[in-house]
Picture 1 (spheres, rainbow, N blue to C red):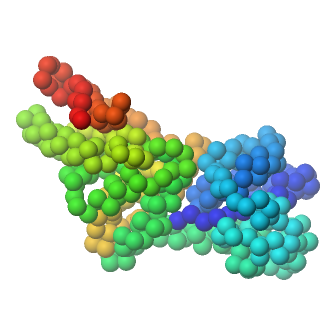
Picture 2: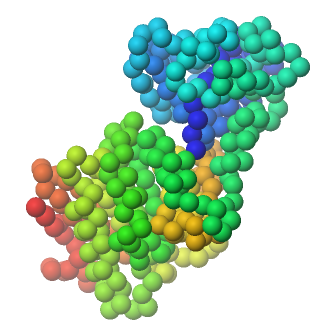
Length: 364
């Protein structure tokens, strides 16, 4: 789930970095990682966003904040109604806000001088948790979110509303690319229980333009004839998805399916089932069943986000690239000039002949 998190400007002050440079850098590393994972950064105007950009333009902090700034959005409001969260100077400023700010992260000076926090690390004011983050470890309000996000749902505990409201909807709003990697999803693309998910991909608006949907899956055939039959069925499902969810004002720009054999998929102990929304990854140990029948799963349903410097995220994205390149065939559906165009690229020579799987299907 995502929450609205504010960061006070004291964390960017010269005095904060002068007192303990190493501690300040560690603080920004921790805070930005948590914001990417759990936070929603929204500005009330382009002016506010430009002002904040100036605050973080120092190379010392820009390294950490650039990605967050790129993912931030602007929601125009009545000028002057809210004090920007990084400029808050009193508790009364919190009382006047109407943007559902949940957590305000501060350092020692702001904690003592603005909020009179002396012997406590966190306090509640007007529904906002004001929390010191210039200490070792994860701030307690965000720590609670980490524990919730990484919860293991036991049998009958996970319901579809929770999946939709707390995970899928907010992540779609904050991303422009969705990647599903599940070796068995090829068998359930037309499952009635998944229709809500495809409709959500079509109808939900992203703050970052139209989105691309990419599905990486496996055809568990034992011979070429069986491969071909299964691929034909998968093509039919792909066409149905394209017809139903592309065009007509859809927020989906394209749908691509990469299909691998069991040998191409491999089995070297890697995690092979997840849904990725740009940087955010939901691990689905029970596969896409958590989408169409979550209450029937005993699923470790977790999400996390890691930047390029984290090996786990790099491993997942590199495996996606490897699988898409190694695929037996890839099929992409996209709208061009008002027509639904299907492009099929096969790595099997005998399917590249005329009348095979390779080529362009233009469907009115």
